[in-house]
Amino acid sequence: MREAPREPVRERLFDLLLWLLLCVPVLLKSDPNDGGSWTRVAVGVVVLAGCVAVSRRWPLMSLAAAVAASLPATLELFTPSYSLALVAFGYLAGRRQEHTRAALWLFGAIAATGLVLTWVTRTSLGQWFTLLLALALAVVAPWLIGRYVRQYDRLVQSGWQLADRMEREQAAIADRERLRERSRIAGDMHDSLGHDLALIAIRAGALEVSPHLGPDQQRAVGELRRAAADATARLRDIIGVLREEDDAAPTSPAGETVEELAARARASGLTVTLATTPVPTLPGMSGLALHRVVQEGLTNAAKHAPGAAVSIAVTPQDDEAATVRVEVVSGPGTGGPSPGSGGTGLVGLGERVRLAGGTLTHRATEDGGFALTAVLPRKAPAPLPAAPTSARELDLARREVRKGLARAIWIPLALLAALGVLMLGVAAWTQAQSYLEPDDYARIRTGQTPAQLDETIDDWPEHPLDAAPHVAPPEPPGMDECRYYRSTMLAAVPVYRLCFVGGHLADKAEVP
Image: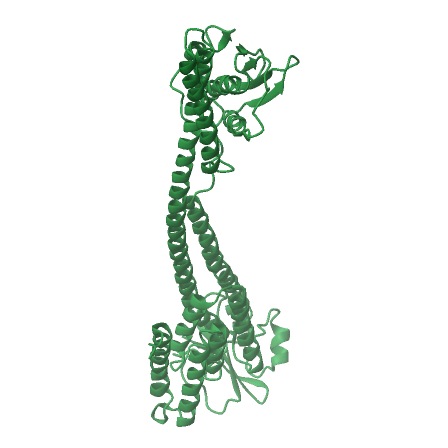
Protein backbone atom coordinates (compact mmCIF):
# COMPACT_ATOMS: atom_id res chain seq x y z
CA MET A 1 0.00 0.00 0.00
CA ARG A 2 1.34 3.39 -1.02
CA GLU A 3 1.77 6.00 1.69
CA ALA A 4 -0.36 9.13 1.29
CA PRO A 5 1.55 12.37 0.63
CA ARG A 6 2.35 14.23 3.81
CA GLU A 7 1.91 17.74 2.48
CA PRO A 8 -1.89 17.55 1.81
CA VAL A 9 -2.36 15.96 5.23
CA ARG A 10 -0.51 18.83 6.89
CA GLU A 11 -2.56 21.37 4.94
CA ARG A 12 -5.84 19.75 5.98
CA LEU A 13 -4.71 19.57 9.60
CA PHE A 14 -3.70 23.23 9.54
CA ASP A 15 -7.06 24.24 8.02
CA LEU A 16 -8.93 22.24 10.65
CA LEU A 17 -7.02 23.83 13.52
CA LEU A 18 -7.51 27.29 11.98
CA TRP A 19 -11.26 26.74 11.70
CA LEU A 20 -11.52 25.57 15.31
CA LEU A 21 -9.52 28.58 16.50
CA LEU A 22 -11.66 31.06 14.56
CA CYS A 23 -14.87 29.47 15.85
CA VAL A 24 -13.93 30.15 19.49
CA PRO A 25 -14.80 33.91 19.42
CA VAL A 26 -18.06 33.13 17.62
CA LEU A 27 -19.06 30.61 20.30
CA LEU A 28 -18.11 32.97 23.12
CA LYS A 29 -19.64 36.20 21.76
CA SER A 30 -22.65 35.03 19.73
CA ASP A 31 -24.32 32.60 22.11
CA PRO A 32 -27.64 33.49 23.80
CA ASN A 33 -25.90 34.22 27.10
CA ASP A 34 -24.03 37.12 25.47
CA GLY A 35 -26.95 38.68 23.62
CA GLY A 36 -26.71 36.47 20.54
CA SER A 37 -28.51 33.38 19.36
CA TRP A 38 -27.66 29.84 18.42
CA THR A 39 -28.74 30.64 14.87
CA ARG A 40 -26.07 33.33 14.74
CA VAL A 41 -23.55 30.84 16.12
CA ALA A 42 -24.46 28.25 13.46
CA VAL A 43 -24.26 30.82 10.67
CA GLY A 44 -20.88 32.02 11.90
CA VAL A 45 -19.45 28.52 12.16
CA VAL A 46 -20.65 27.62 8.67
CA VAL A 47 -19.34 30.88 7.17
CA LEU A 48 -15.93 30.37 8.77
CA ALA A 49 -15.81 26.77 7.53
CA GLY A 50 -16.45 27.97 3.98
CA CYS A 51 -13.83 30.70 4.32
CA VAL A 52 -11.19 28.24 5.49
CA ALA A 53 -12.15 25.77 2.73
CA VAL A 54 -11.59 28.28 -0.10
CA SER A 55 -8.78 30.28 1.50
CA ARG A 56 -6.03 28.40 -0.34
CA ARG A 57 -7.49 28.84 -3.81
CA TRP A 58 -9.35 32.15 -3.37
CA PRO A 59 -7.85 33.91 -0.31
CA LEU A 60 -9.47 37.25 -1.11
CA MET A 61 -12.91 35.61 -1.23
CA SER A 62 -12.38 34.35 2.32
CA LEU A 63 -11.41 37.83 3.47
CA ALA A 64 -14.44 39.38 1.75
CA ALA A 65 -16.74 36.83 3.39
CA ALA A 66 -15.31 37.60 6.85
CA VAL A 67 -15.87 41.33 6.24
CA ALA A 68 -19.44 40.63 5.05
CA ALA A 69 -20.10 38.68 8.26
CA SER A 70 -18.76 41.56 10.39
CA LEU A 71 -20.57 44.54 8.81
CA PRO A 72 -24.15 43.48 9.76
CA ALA A 73 -23.09 43.37 13.41
CA THR A 74 -21.55 46.85 13.38
CA LEU A 75 -20.55 49.41 10.81
CA GLU A 76 -17.29 49.83 12.67
CA LEU A 77 -16.22 46.45 11.20
CA PHE A 78 -14.17 45.32 14.20
CA THR A 79 -16.45 42.88 16.01
CA PRO A 80 -15.58 40.54 18.91
CA SER A 81 -16.88 37.52 16.99
CA TYR A 82 -14.97 38.01 13.72
CA SER A 83 -12.02 40.20 14.64
CA LEU A 84 -9.66 37.22 14.80
CA ALA A 85 -11.00 35.99 11.45
CA LEU A 86 -10.28 39.38 9.85
CA VAL A 87 -6.70 39.30 11.09
CA ALA A 88 -6.16 35.66 10.02
CA PHE A 89 -7.68 35.95 6.54
CA GLY A 90 -5.97 39.31 5.97
CA TYR A 91 -2.60 37.67 6.64
CA LEU A 92 -3.42 34.61 4.52
CA ALA A 93 -4.54 36.85 1.64
CA GLY A 94 -1.18 38.62 1.66
CA ARG A 95 0.66 35.34 2.06
CA ARG A 96 -1.14 33.39 -0.67
CA GLN A 97 -2.27 35.98 -3.21
CA GLU A 98 0.11 36.39 -6.15
CA HIS A 99 -0.81 39.92 -7.19
CA THR A 100 -1.65 42.98 -5.10
CA ARG A 101 -4.04 44.82 -7.38
CA ALA A 102 -7.08 42.69 -6.51
CA ALA A 103 -6.43 43.16 -2.77
CA LEU A 104 -6.20 46.93 -3.18
CA TRP A 105 -9.50 46.94 -5.07
CA LEU A 106 -11.06 44.91 -2.23
CA PHE A 107 -9.82 47.36 0.41
CA GLY A 108 -11.24 50.26 -1.59
CA ALA A 109 -14.56 48.43 -2.00
CA ILE A 110 -14.77 47.81 1.76
CA ALA A 111 -14.18 51.51 2.48
CA ALA A 112 -16.72 52.55 -0.15
CA THR A 113 -19.29 50.07 1.16
CA GLY A 114 -18.86 51.37 4.69
CA LEU A 115 -19.39 54.95 3.46
CA VAL A 116 -22.56 53.96 1.60
CA LEU A 117 -23.94 52.10 4.62
CA THR A 118 -23.15 55.12 6.80
CA TRP A 119 -25.13 57.34 4.46
CA VAL A 120 -28.05 54.87 4.15
CA THR A 121 -28.38 54.36 7.90
CA ARG A 122 -27.99 58.10 8.61
CA THR A 123 -25.21 57.50 11.14
CA SER A 124 -22.32 59.83 11.82
CA LEU A 125 -19.11 59.79 9.85
CA GLY A 126 -17.29 58.84 13.04
CA GLN A 127 -18.35 55.23 12.55
CA TRP A 128 -16.96 55.27 9.01
CA PHE A 129 -13.67 56.61 10.30
CA THR A 130 -13.66 53.83 12.87
CA LEU A 131 -14.26 51.35 10.04
CA LEU A 132 -11.27 52.74 8.16
CA LEU A 133 -9.13 52.44 11.27
CA ALA A 134 -10.28 48.85 11.84
CA LEU A 135 -9.64 48.10 8.17
CA ALA A 136 -6.10 49.43 8.46
CA LEU A 137 -5.23 47.63 11.69
CA ALA A 138 -7.16 44.36 11.38
CA VAL A 139 -6.94 43.74 7.62
CA VAL A 140 -4.33 45.84 5.81
CA ALA A 141 -1.58 45.51 8.45
CA PRO A 142 -1.81 41.65 8.57
CA TRP A 143 -1.99 41.65 4.78
CA LEU A 144 1.27 43.63 4.60
CA ILE A 145 2.90 41.18 6.99
CA GLY A 146 1.73 38.31 4.79
CA ARG A 147 3.15 40.04 1.71
CA TYR A 148 6.48 40.47 3.46
CA VAL A 149 6.61 36.78 4.41
CA ARG A 150 5.69 35.81 0.85
CA GLN A 151 8.39 38.01 -0.66
CA TYR A 152 10.96 36.73 1.81
CA ASP A 153 10.08 33.12 0.98
CA ARG A 154 10.41 33.92 -2.72
CA LEU A 155 13.83 35.40 -2.10
CA VAL A 156 14.95 32.33 -0.15
CA GLN A 157 13.54 30.01 -2.81
CA SER A 158 15.28 31.98 -5.57
CA GLY A 159 18.53 31.74 -3.63
CA TRP A 160 18.26 27.96 -3.30
CA GLN A 161 17.33 27.58 -6.98
CA LEU A 162 20.28 29.71 -8.05
CA ALA A 163 22.59 27.80 -5.72
CA ASP A 164 21.40 24.50 -7.21
CA ARG A 165 21.85 25.87 -10.70
CA MET A 166 25.32 27.13 -9.81
CA GLU A 167 26.28 23.63 -8.65
CA ARG A 168 25.01 22.11 -11.90
CA GLU A 169 26.77 24.79 -13.94
CA GLN A 170 30.01 24.27 -12.04
CA ALA A 171 29.81 20.52 -12.67
CA ALA A 172 29.11 21.13 -16.37
CA ILE A 173 31.94 23.67 -16.58
CA ALA A 174 34.32 21.20 -14.92
CA ASP A 175 33.36 18.47 -17.40
CA ARG A 176 33.70 20.86 -20.33
CA GLU A 177 37.08 22.08 -19.12
CA ARG A 178 38.31 18.52 -18.80
CA LEU A 179 37.25 17.83 -22.39
CA ARG A 180 38.81 21.08 -23.56
CA GLU A 181 42.05 20.25 -21.77
CA ARG A 182 42.15 16.89 -23.51
CA SER A 183 41.55 18.67 -26.79
CA ARG A 184 44.37 21.12 -26.04
CA ILE A 185 46.67 18.22 -25.23
CA ALA A 186 45.69 16.65 -28.53
CA GLY A 187 46.40 19.95 -30.29
CA ASP A 188 49.82 20.16 -28.66
CA MET A 189 50.58 16.63 -29.79
CA HIS A 190 49.63 17.55 -33.34
CA ASP A 191 51.58 20.80 -33.34
CA SER A 192 54.76 19.64 -31.62
CA LEU A 193 55.00 15.98 -32.66
CA GLY A 194 53.77 16.70 -36.19
CA HIS A 195 56.43 19.35 -36.56
CA ASP A 196 59.14 17.07 -35.19
CA LEU A 197 58.04 14.10 -37.35
CA ALA A 198 58.12 16.35 -40.43
CA LEU A 199 61.69 17.33 -39.60
CA ILE A 200 62.63 13.64 -39.07
CA ALA A 201 61.19 12.81 -42.48
CA ILE A 202 63.30 15.58 -44.06
CA ARG A 203 66.47 14.27 -42.43
CA ALA A 204 65.63 10.72 -43.50
CA GLY A 205 65.00 11.92 -47.04
CA ALA A 206 68.40 13.59 -47.11
CA LEU A 207 70.08 10.41 -45.89
CA GLU A 208 68.16 8.31 -48.41
CA VAL A 209 69.89 10.03 -51.34
CA SER A 210 73.28 10.26 -49.63
CA PRO A 211 76.07 8.56 -51.73
CA HIS A 212 77.89 7.55 -48.55
CA LEU A 213 75.29 4.90 -47.67
CA GLY A 214 74.92 1.51 -49.23
CA PRO A 215 71.72 0.14 -50.82
CA ASP A 216 70.65 -1.61 -47.62
CA GLN A 217 71.16 1.50 -45.51
CA GLN A 218 69.34 3.66 -48.07
CA ARG A 219 66.44 1.18 -48.11
CA ALA A 220 66.24 1.31 -44.30
CA VAL A 221 66.33 5.09 -44.27
CA GLY A 222 63.59 5.14 -46.91
CA GLU A 223 61.47 2.92 -44.70
CA LEU A 224 62.17 5.29 -41.80
CA ARG A 225 61.05 8.25 -43.89
CA ARG A 226 57.85 6.49 -44.94
CA ALA A 227 57.20 5.40 -41.34
CA ALA A 228 57.57 8.99 -40.16
CA ALA A 229 55.16 10.15 -42.88
CA ASP A 230 52.66 7.42 -41.97
CA ALA A 231 52.97 8.30 -38.26
CA THR A 232 52.27 11.93 -39.12
CA ALA A 233 49.15 10.93 -41.07
CA ARG A 234 47.89 8.64 -38.26
CA LEU A 235 48.57 11.38 -35.70
CA ARG A 236 46.55 13.83 -37.81
CA ASP A 237 43.63 11.38 -38.02
CA ILE A 238 43.64 10.72 -34.27
CA ILE A 239 43.82 14.42 -33.44
CA GLY A 240 40.94 15.07 -35.83
CA VAL A 241 38.79 12.68 -33.80
CA LEU A 242 39.79 14.16 -30.44
CA ARG A 243 39.38 17.81 -31.40
CA GLU A 244 36.01 19.46 -30.93
CA GLU A 245 34.43 21.31 -33.83
CA ASP A 246 34.41 24.66 -32.01
CA ASP A 247 37.58 24.07 -30.01
CA ALA A 248 39.94 27.00 -29.87
CA ALA A 249 43.54 26.62 -30.79
CA PRO A 250 45.76 25.36 -27.99
CA THR A 251 47.34 28.03 -25.89
CA SER A 252 50.39 26.10 -24.68
CA PRO A 253 53.64 28.00 -25.28
CA ALA A 254 56.19 26.46 -27.59
CA GLY A 255 58.97 27.14 -25.09
CA GLU A 256 61.34 28.63 -27.66
CA THR A 257 61.81 31.87 -29.57
CA VAL A 258 61.26 32.34 -33.28
CA GLU A 259 65.04 32.47 -33.81
CA GLU A 260 65.45 29.11 -32.02
CA LEU A 261 62.58 27.61 -34.00
CA ALA A 262 64.13 28.71 -37.31
CA ALA A 263 67.56 27.42 -36.24
CA ARG A 264 66.11 24.01 -35.32
CA ALA A 265 64.32 23.78 -38.69
CA ARG A 266 67.54 24.83 -40.45
CA ALA A 267 69.46 22.13 -38.61
CA SER A 268 66.90 19.56 -39.81
CA GLY A 269 67.63 20.34 -43.45
CA LEU A 270 65.22 23.11 -44.33
CA THR A 271 66.49 26.20 -46.09
CA VAL A 272 65.18 28.91 -43.75
CA THR A 273 65.86 32.63 -44.06
CA LEU A 274 64.93 34.89 -41.16
CA ALA A 275 64.59 38.37 -42.63
CA THR A 276 64.06 40.14 -39.30
CA THR A 277 66.67 39.99 -36.54
CA PRO A 278 65.97 40.26 -33.73
CA VAL A 279 62.30 39.32 -33.90
CA PRO A 280 60.09 41.76 -31.93
CA THR A 281 58.77 40.39 -28.67
CA LEU A 282 54.98 40.45 -28.39
CA PRO A 283 53.04 40.15 -25.12
CA GLY A 284 50.66 37.40 -24.08
CA MET A 285 48.51 35.79 -26.74
CA SER A 286 50.13 37.75 -29.53
CA GLY A 287 53.56 36.21 -28.75
CA LEU A 288 52.09 32.71 -28.67
CA ALA A 289 50.25 33.33 -31.94
CA LEU A 290 53.47 34.63 -33.58
CA HIS A 291 55.33 31.46 -32.59
CA ARG A 292 52.49 29.24 -33.88
CA VAL A 293 52.27 31.06 -37.25
CA VAL A 294 55.98 30.51 -37.86
CA GLN A 295 55.79 26.88 -36.66
CA GLU A 296 52.78 26.12 -38.88
CA GLY A 297 54.46 27.71 -41.89
CA LEU A 298 57.62 25.61 -41.40
CA THR A 299 55.58 22.44 -40.85
CA ASN A 300 53.57 22.98 -44.04
CA ALA A 301 56.75 23.64 -46.00
CA ALA A 302 58.38 20.47 -44.65
CA LYS A 303 55.30 18.34 -45.39
CA HIS A 304 54.15 19.69 -48.73
CA ALA A 305 57.23 21.34 -50.28
CA PRO A 306 60.30 19.36 -49.19
CA GLY A 307 63.51 21.00 -50.27
CA ALA A 308 61.90 24.39 -50.86
CA ALA A 309 63.35 27.55 -49.36
CA VAL A 310 61.35 29.24 -46.61
CA SER A 311 61.46 32.97 -45.83
CA ILE A 312 60.28 34.41 -42.51
CA ALA A 313 59.64 38.15 -42.06
CA VAL A 314 58.31 39.88 -38.93
CA THR A 315 57.68 43.57 -39.63
CA PRO A 316 56.22 46.17 -37.21
CA GLN A 317 53.52 48.23 -38.93
CA ASP A 318 53.25 52.01 -38.69
CA ASP A 319 49.51 52.21 -38.05
CA GLU A 320 47.25 53.44 -35.28
CA ALA A 321 46.42 49.89 -34.21
CA ALA A 322 50.12 49.17 -33.40
CA THR A 323 50.35 45.81 -35.16
CA VAL A 324 53.06 43.42 -36.35
CA ARG A 325 52.93 41.63 -39.71
CA VAL A 326 54.45 38.15 -39.84
CA GLU A 327 54.76 36.34 -43.16
CA VAL A 328 56.09 32.84 -43.87
CA VAL A 329 56.63 32.14 -47.59
CA SER A 330 57.72 28.74 -48.93
CA GLY A 331 58.95 27.95 -52.41
CA PRO A 332 57.23 25.88 -55.10
CA GLY A 333 55.40 22.78 -53.88
CA THR A 334 51.88 21.64 -53.29
CA GLY A 335 51.10 25.06 -51.89
CA GLY A 336 49.05 23.93 -48.90
CA PRO A 337 47.57 20.95 -47.13
CA SER A 338 47.23 17.84 -49.18
CA PRO A 339 43.71 16.63 -50.03
CA GLY A 340 43.73 14.16 -47.17
CA SER A 341 44.93 16.53 -44.48
CA GLY A 342 41.68 18.38 -43.79
CA GLY A 343 43.46 21.66 -43.06
CA THR A 344 42.91 21.45 -39.28
CA GLY A 345 46.26 23.11 -38.62
CA LEU A 346 45.26 26.29 -40.42
CA VAL A 347 41.80 26.23 -38.80
CA GLY A 348 43.30 25.99 -35.32
CA LEU A 349 45.91 28.61 -36.18
CA GLY A 350 43.20 31.01 -37.39
CA GLU A 351 41.33 30.57 -34.11
CA ARG A 352 44.46 31.30 -32.10
CA VAL A 353 45.18 34.45 -34.10
CA ARG A 354 41.56 35.58 -33.73
CA LEU A 355 41.70 35.13 -29.96
CA ALA A 356 44.87 37.23 -29.92
CA GLY A 357 43.02 40.05 -31.71
CA GLY A 358 44.63 39.58 -35.12
CA THR A 359 43.85 38.27 -38.61
CA LEU A 360 45.23 35.35 -40.63
CA THR A 361 45.35 34.92 -44.39
CA HIS A 362 47.00 32.35 -46.67
CA ARG A 363 47.48 32.25 -50.43
CA ALA A 364 49.39 30.60 -53.22
CA THR A 365 52.29 32.60 -54.65
CA GLU A 366 52.87 33.26 -58.35
CA ASP A 367 55.76 30.78 -58.57
CA GLY A 368 53.65 27.96 -57.06
CA GLY A 369 54.70 28.43 -53.46
CA PHE A 370 52.60 29.15 -50.41
CA ALA A 371 52.39 32.31 -48.22
CA LEU A 372 51.01 32.42 -44.69
CA THR A 373 50.41 35.98 -43.36
CA ALA A 374 49.18 37.15 -39.96
CA VAL A 375 48.68 40.62 -38.49
CA LEU A 376 48.97 40.66 -34.69
CA PRO A 377 48.54 43.48 -32.17
CA ARG A 378 51.62 44.64 -30.27
CA LYS A 379 49.41 45.33 -27.23
CA ALA A 380 47.41 42.82 -25.27
CA PRO A 381 43.75 42.81 -26.43
CA ALA A 382 41.08 44.11 -24.08
CA PRO A 383 39.47 41.36 -22.00
CA LEU A 384 36.08 40.14 -23.10
CA PRO A 385 33.12 41.36 -21.03
CA ALA A 386 32.31 38.96 -18.24
CA ALA A 387 29.12 36.98 -18.61
CA PRO A 388 26.45 37.42 -15.98
CA THR A 389 27.18 35.18 -13.03
CA SER A 390 24.74 33.44 -10.76
CA ALA A 391 25.68 35.85 -7.97
CA ARG A 392 24.63 38.75 -10.19
CA GLU A 393 21.40 36.96 -11.06
CA LEU A 394 20.74 36.42 -7.37
CA ASP A 395 21.28 40.13 -6.78
CA LEU A 396 18.80 40.92 -9.56
CA ALA A 397 16.30 38.53 -8.00
CA ARG A 398 16.76 40.27 -4.67
CA ARG A 399 16.13 43.65 -6.26
CA GLU A 400 12.96 42.41 -7.94
CA VAL A 401 11.70 40.98 -4.65
CA ARG A 402 12.49 44.25 -2.87
CA LYS A 403 10.66 46.23 -5.53
CA GLY A 404 7.63 43.97 -5.22
CA LEU A 405 7.72 44.25 -1.45
CA ALA A 406 8.07 48.03 -1.63
CA ARG A 407 5.07 48.25 -3.96
CA ALA A 408 3.08 45.99 -1.67
CA ILE A 409 3.84 48.31 1.26
CA TRP A 410 3.83 51.87 -0.05
CA ILE A 411 0.64 51.56 -2.13
CA PRO A 412 -1.58 50.59 0.85
CA LEU A 413 0.22 53.08 3.06
CA ALA A 414 -0.40 55.79 0.48
CA LEU A 415 -4.08 54.87 0.42
CA LEU A 416 -4.22 54.94 4.21
CA ALA A 417 -2.47 58.30 4.25
CA ALA A 418 -5.00 59.64 1.77
CA LEU A 419 -7.82 58.31 3.92
CA GLY A 420 -6.24 59.89 6.99
CA VAL A 421 -6.09 63.25 5.24
CA LEU A 422 -9.72 62.79 4.23
CA MET A 423 -10.66 61.97 7.82
CA LEU A 424 -8.92 65.08 9.10
CA GLY A 425 -10.60 67.20 6.46
CA VAL A 426 -14.05 65.84 7.24
CA ALA A 427 -13.45 66.25 10.97
CA ALA A 428 -12.34 69.85 10.49
CA TRP A 429 -15.35 70.55 8.27
CA THR A 430 -17.72 68.97 10.80
CA GLN A 431 -16.28 71.01 13.63
CA ALA A 432 -16.49 74.16 11.53
CA GLN A 433 -20.20 73.49 10.98
CA SER A 434 -21.08 72.65 14.61
CA TYR A 435 -19.77 75.49 16.80
CA LEU A 436 -21.48 78.65 18.04
CA GLU A 437 -19.56 81.79 18.93
CA PRO A 438 -20.01 83.02 22.56
CA ASP A 439 -21.20 86.45 21.33
CA ASP A 440 -23.81 84.85 19.11
CA TYR A 441 -24.94 82.63 21.99
CA ALA A 442 -25.46 85.72 24.18
CA ARG A 443 -27.77 87.26 21.53
CA ILE A 444 -30.08 84.26 21.52
CA ARG A 445 -33.40 84.71 23.34
CA THR A 446 -35.93 82.10 24.45
CA GLY A 447 -39.09 81.95 22.38
CA GLN A 448 -37.29 82.42 19.05
CA THR A 449 -37.93 79.98 16.22
CA PRO A 450 -35.11 78.36 14.21
CA ALA A 451 -35.89 80.73 11.35
CA GLN A 452 -35.53 83.74 13.64
CA LEU A 453 -32.28 82.37 15.03
CA ASP A 454 -30.97 82.06 11.49
CA GLU A 455 -31.87 85.69 10.86
CA THR A 456 -30.38 86.89 14.16
CA ILE A 457 -27.03 85.12 13.66
CA ASP A 458 -25.24 85.51 10.32
CA ASP A 459 -23.20 82.25 10.49
CA TRP A 460 -25.71 79.96 12.12
CA PRO A 461 -24.15 76.46 12.42
CA GLU A 462 -25.83 74.02 10.06
CA HIS A 463 -24.92 70.81 11.90
CA PRO A 464 -25.17 70.35 15.67
CA LEU A 465 -23.17 67.71 17.49
CA ASP A 466 -24.23 64.14 16.86
CA ALA A 467 -25.12 63.55 20.50
CA ALA A 468 -24.92 65.12 23.94
CA PRO A 469 -21.57 64.93 25.74
CA HIS A 470 -21.18 61.96 28.07
CA VAL A 471 -20.94 64.18 31.18
CA ALA A 472 -23.84 66.48 30.23
CA PRO A 473 -26.57 66.90 32.88
CA PRO A 474 -30.08 65.55 32.18
CA GLU A 475 -32.15 67.53 29.70
CA PRO A 476 -35.12 69.55 31.01
CA PRO A 477 -38.34 67.53 31.00
CA GLY A 478 -40.96 68.12 28.34
CA MET A 479 -38.54 69.22 25.64
CA ASP A 480 -39.17 68.09 22.06
CA GLU A 481 -35.54 68.42 20.91
CA CYS A 482 -32.22 69.56 22.32
CA ARG A 483 -29.28 70.58 20.18
CA TYR A 484 -25.67 70.87 21.29
CA TYR A 485 -23.01 73.18 19.84
CA ARG A 486 -19.33 73.76 20.66
CA SER A 487 -18.35 77.12 21.99
CA THR A 488 -15.32 77.31 19.63
CA MET A 489 -14.24 75.27 16.64
CA LEU A 490 -11.43 73.38 18.41
CA ALA A 491 -12.50 73.35 22.05
CA ALA A 492 -14.45 70.39 23.39
CA VAL A 493 -15.89 72.27 26.40
CA PRO A 494 -17.98 74.13 27.25
CA VAL A 495 -20.94 73.07 25.07
CA TYR A 496 -24.06 75.16 24.45
CA ARG A 497 -27.46 73.40 24.69
CA LEU A 498 -30.59 74.72 22.96
CA CYS A 499 -33.87 72.93 23.69
CA PHE A 500 -37.04 73.46 21.64
CA VAL A 501 -40.75 72.92 22.35
CA GLY A 502 -43.34 73.37 19.63
CA GLY A 503 -40.81 74.91 17.28
CA HIS A 504 -39.67 77.61 19.75
CA LEU A 505 -36.57 77.89 21.88
CA ALA A 506 -37.62 76.99 25.40
CA ASP A 507 -34.29 76.63 27.20
CA LYS A 508 -30.66 77.61 26.65
CA ALA A 509 -27.82 76.50 28.86
CA GLU A 510 -24.05 76.16 28.96
CA VAL A 511 -23.05 72.59 29.67
CA PRO A 512 -19.71 72.55 31.51
